[in-house]
Image (cartoon, helix red, strand yellow):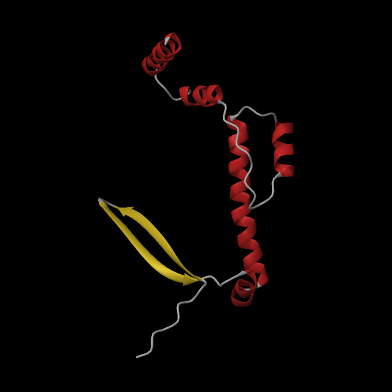
Length: 125
């Protein structure tokens, strides 16, 4: 019996789901095509483009959320979005104060007090 040649466009796709108390997972191989041209041939240009739009929209929304968390203005976010290109990583700036402030919104008064004590202790060192 001859071995089948591995398909280059074959991607392993995994999924898991908790059903009741049981966690189930499964993996399947799916041929998405070796490149864009082959994907268009297999699924059609409209499908390939609509999936590209869907994935790119989710990535842009993540960029926008990070900008909101960094307290950027609407104009700043609009400029960031205008300069963004799918597939090109943006330089991430991290504002620790904004991150802490955002996290503290969901903390109890006791937890906030504990954070302040840790900060005071860290500053004193």
